[in-house]
Amino acid sequence: MEQAVKDKEFLEYIVKAIVSNPDKVSAERTVDEMGVLLTLKIDPSDMGYVIGRRGQTAQAIRTLLKIIGAKNQARINLKIYEPEGSRRPSRRNEDIDTSSVDDLKI
Image (cartoon, rainbow, N blue to C red):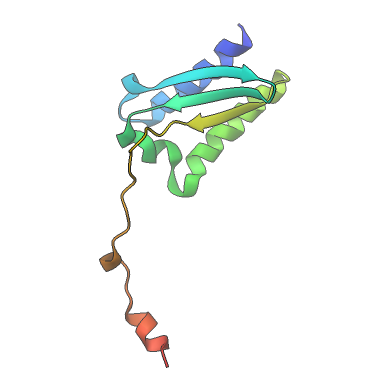
């Protein structure tokens, strides 16, 4: 099996197993002087599943891709596509308990 098919299909297989909308998962592969770039496109509602808490899931996927790349003498990078105008939920100030901060004021 060709390298291009291995890394791209591996990425799609892993991500489809994680997300709620596997039919909306696609990966695009480009090669340049820096190596291989896999751009992952997913449903925006699945972004949290792929990124994970503190980015741990995305980092684990990147690590696995680097292992595949090393085995095939290629440098593989992963970019998770975020569409223009998409917004992450912002933290609201009422979620933060400020009572302990007031105790520290002199």
